[in-house]
Amino acid sequence: MLRVYALHCGSLEFDRSLFFPASAQGVRIATPVSSYLIVHPQGKVLFDTGIHCDALTDPAGRLGKRVASLFGLRSRAGEDVVSQLATLGIGPHDIRYVVNSHFHFDHCGCNASFTRATFLLQRAELLAARTERNRYNPKDWDHPLDYREIDGEHDVFGDGVLVLLPTPGHTPGHQSLWIRLDAGTQFVLTADACYTQEHLEKTILPGAVHDAAQMTQSLAMLRGLRDRQGVKLLYGHDAGQWDAMPHAPHPFI
Ligand SMILES: [Zn+2]
Ligand SMILES: [Zn+2]
Image (tube, rainbow, N blue to C red; front, side, top):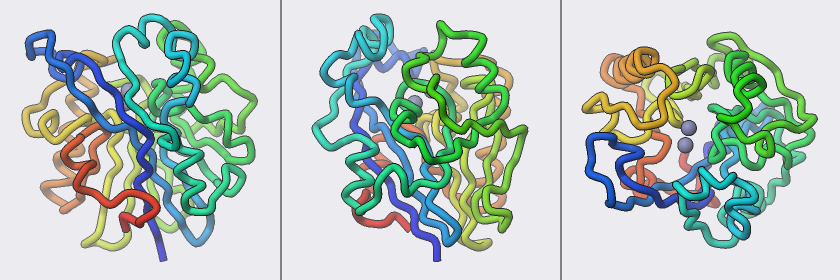
C-alpha cells in the first residue's frame, strides 16, 4: 500500500513577472514551496527538501543577496521539511531515497539533513551545479551526501510505481516524479518543469529558463501524459491547486 503526503514547506512572495514574463512589473504574488513524502513498502522516498530554515532569519546570508532581493520568504515556524516529517513521526534518518527535482534553493535547501539517504539526481543537474557555481548555491547541495547520478528515466524500486521522469529545460537536469498506482491512478509531481496550470495551458515559459526549446518540449510531454493517459499533474508552485489538496499529517493518497 502506497501513501503519499504533501508537505507544506512555507511560501515565497515575489514579482509576478518572474513567473509570467508578459505580466507588468509591480504585482506581488505568493506561491507555496512543497515537498512530498512517498511511503513505499520498500522504503520512504522524499521528493525535494524545500528551503533551509536559516533563510527565515538571515535571507541574504543563506540565499545570497540577489535571490534574497527577489524572493521574500513567508514561512512560519514548522514550515520546513524536517518539521513536517516530524508531524508524521518520521526523522531524516528514516528516509531511504531523496529525489531532488533540481538544485534551486527552494527544492534542495535541506539536503544536508538527510545524511543516511541516497539522493537520486540527473547527471546533467549535478554537472551543472558543479560547473556553474554562480547559478546554484553550494550551501544547499554541496555536502558529503550519497549522490547517485541517473541518466534519463529511472524506476526507483523496479516495480513501476515510482519513476523518475527527465523534464529538462528549466535547468539542464530537471526531473519530475511519476507515481503509478494503477492505470487509473497516476500522478506526476512536476516541480519547476511546470509552475502552475496556467503555464501548462498557455505554454508560458517563466523567467528562469535554461533552454526554452527543451522546456517547451517538457511541457508538451507533461500535457500529453495528462491528456492521453489521464495522469494528474501536481504543479510545482500552483497556489490554487496546493490550497485545495490535503497536507501532512493527512495523506494525499
Ligand atoms: Zn527552479
Ligand atoms: Zn521552485
